[in-house]
Image 1 (cartoon, rainbow, N blue to C red):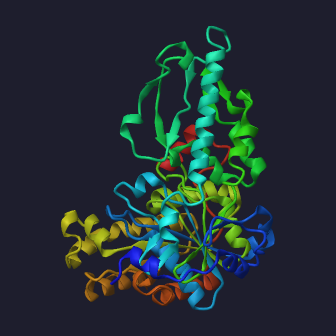
Image 2 (tube, rainbow, N blue to C red; image 1 turned 45 degrees about the horizontal axis):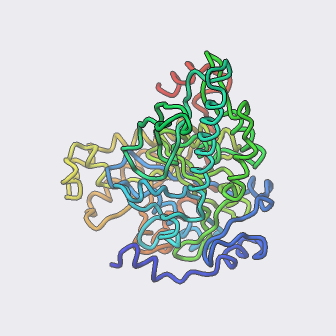
Image 3 (spheres, rainbow, N blue to C red; image 1 turned 90 degrees about the vertical axis):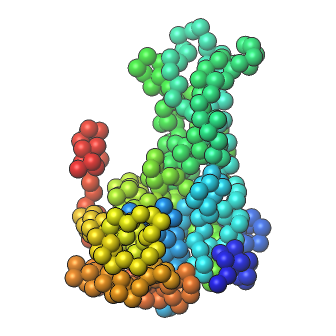
Length: 452
């Protein structure tokens, strides 16, 4: 079988203007970044269409180190829906250079279920990450300048909590001292760099409903303290300038899949420190132009999906019609007590022992009011006995089950999963979200509810 990169390079991509026109977006309105990437103006958002569209969330059980294939499943589901005659798109986060060059690798799907051009998406893409890096560090530089000009006065801050960011894994930059070399170089102080997806700018960028909303959120960012009084970007007086740096980045990015179906890839906050979802604007843009939109959240349902529902859906008003939980025998065997080196070996007993992990994730999503579909990512080492037992187990627990072969066969291989999604949406869609906490709960109460 061809490698991911061989498959991506063999795919025949259409001009991005053709993909846009499939969606009813005029070719002259998109902002092209080369032949196969473009940004879509926000005037194509259509609230009436958004209300009619069926949003499908993809999450997972607790994965093994290599993951269980959420992105592959998200892309495959959109391919499968188009294969069976539905108008569908996928909406994903854009990858960070740090993980791409680290242990994780790329984040554009795999096999015959990829978003393309794969190299561009994984490496710089349309420059959104760099714009967010620049905006974050511009605030840091202006804050340093404020401190320098107000040193030895009562306007100076006692404590700064704003850090710089860089989209690179560089541990030597995590904690540093800046401002050395004399007074012309600033005030000596401890500082450090986080990775760009960890920037508060990234989180706010992905939760914003408009440019005006983005500016309002940026204004509320706390940069430091004077005594116990917080000092914000609004106090610094630079919010409009920061938004100017993000004026094109805020527009959703349009690309395509291995089967030339539309894909919106925009924003990439990490789920362990933020909400772990692509931008609200990109999800809504995809929903404005399609009957079905598939999107994913970071990590397992106990982290990314909870944040998707509790944070992104609360803020945006979006409501998934169904949730797909991705599962593999390898992950189940790991939870069944098998060493990571042996999880690809046949072991029905270990798989059975790991099923409580899947059961807890199913219960978790049902507690939110979600109708659940278990998507089984099949690998060559899976035995028929293992697959059959898992399907029977799902049936006995009243959960829809489908095998996803999208990695090897694209839309055709995901047709069974797509059919199951349509069946659930039409016959038993999710009910309104049962949020974990209320907006007006105290911070302590919110934490207690999330923890328990």
